[in-house]
Length: 529
Image (tube, rainbow, N blue to C red; front, side):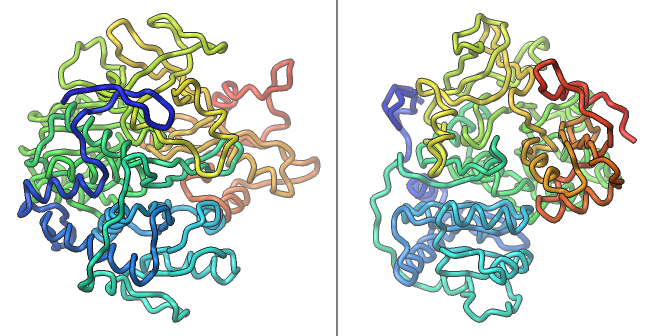
């Protein structure tokens, strides 16, 4: 694949010279080459690429003609992993609409903010999460949504939900001119102010990330992946679904990760490409059913989102002898991968997250934003066509997050003389719980609203299963008595369950430096009761 330089979003970046013009065009190419190949598989349903494209065009046609969806309209998805989720994303891409994939684990208040901030016109919800939407509508907190679609058979109390099935009836769709620089998705990430930021990903970014995976992981139309991580995250959506569409491979979709089902599907569907956070591999190999199957087809095991222990790496190599293990590092803002470990590397590079993707550029800078020497630790800056355009209606974040065309990752890293990247620490107060990113300040803001809390600080502490979990250190107000359950229940009312502190410690004061800053490194070592 030839690489050239072009200007996109006022940045000069490296790009693949021959590439699809937008995401729907990428699907069309696979239909032309692999029309009868299975594209999507779930619960006994098997859609070929030809059928997938036909369904996508029908959905796009109904959205366009019946709902008046135009280029640039935002379409929100509160859906679990499903074939419907996959089809809707490509239908939005066909129309130039912007998909807003919502984290199904979030609470009503968090979802309301995202729907309002994005200005979503349509909301798709499935049976499992209908109660959340009904709760938001009871409080009249969803103002801008014009149409509600229900995926599933549950009967809602309101009569204005439209059944998803009407979208797959025969119709035609008028072509829309969709540029590769047009927005494809708004994906919300935790913000340093406590409010989520909507990262605006482009067709250009999603396509280049798919091609980066293809090139470095050596995938082709014979690849079959098992999607168990959420499709509302870049790993599931881009690292697996879009990636497989790019190469003409097959995506076997799980509603959500369940260890026993994951093991069975990996073996019975002859899955060749696995991509998960380390926690899933640990649970998989620890399950009693794991040894009941064999996995000769698995030839690529990718992982990211959290560090992988040497013990887990050893076990993966033992139980999947035909597979290459390839680490990947990225973020929502990098449209999935920023670095990928090559297939072959020296043992001394094991702690690295790999090399920059083929069209990626990286540098490490000191506190004055000056380039660091090889091996010197500083903040990692990333550039390339896969970097998001910016944050939706958030100029403050845009100004703070970019430097001369590079995105500030907020991660402390070093790059050696061979260009291998090593993540050393996090500049931001970010907790990585099994791949789910949690900003400390977001939880702290909730804790400070508790009437009995005087001070609070939140850190991540090591956990054998999830890599890290949330720990809260709390100073109660004078004369007040607090219990762990009271704090956990309070946070659980406002934030998603994975953000609720697993560990809570009550202290008389927080350790601080002479300038008054809380010394969070000391909090991690305090004795939790």
